[in-house]
Image (cartoon, rainbow, N blue to C red; front, side, top):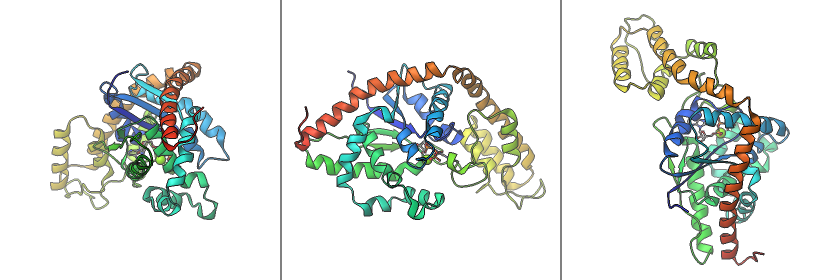
Length: 334
Ligand code: ATP
Ligand code: MG
């Protein structure tokens, strides 16, 4: 057993992964896997919390997400990739934690509140959806993860997890659970290609890591810039200008982006030139991922075998935590 700091992250298999995942979390995971003990959880149970009537959608997207991981540089010899529904300890810890969190507390979670409003659930809100932050706390703590590389929509989940850790540890004779911290990337929330505040599978405003050349071209052409920047010679606005937001997120040459911004603000730099630069960067970033992914997705057997192997490793780790929690609570462990 090594004593590297543990990382846990995950994604819902609700669709193939997109550029928001890449800049918000995936890019960091590919780097961090060299120095940390990293687990990635394919959160199929969490995916079902708002897809309860369409389980096939979740099932079908599992290999899609796995292919995206490999294409984005996740190396299964360095990172353990596992499946939430294959780890019963996560469900059991969720059941235990549900008793120490109030309804008022789950209703206060701003991300969940926002998602409930966006999805228009009203009284048809699934119970599982309301409490998914509790199951996420179970996921993180079962692995004793201390670092969680996520987008900023996940900050309320980390806060809630730490409250649960504090409360649960206070009920146990010795502290079993670890506190965790979010690791935000430079682009902790990439807006959608429609300019909506967050690129998200559910909002249908994504640029997939498997996007075709034409899809990339189309997304950039339709992108919102400064509506008052009519002539090339006009001074332009950077704030809220999607083209610059994306250039900030993905351009490898930060100095060049800074120079372009200054030029745009003083006038003389056209939207077309900026969009061409962005499209070139996106094509260069996505093409190799798209190609690798196309190969991986042809071998779903290999992808699922990788997930099974990772889940078996994760089973050991998570069962151990569950056992410690149960013992600490004085529950019989047979
Ligand atoms: P869904 O709409 O089904 O919830 P999603 O697009 O929000 O899907 P998730 O699987 O919920 O994706 O998120 C997985 C991880 O990717 C989380 O850490 C989340 O913070 C991060 N992430 C998702 N979208 C973005 C984004 N637009 N910018 C930065 N990070 C993001
Ligand atoms: Mg989400």
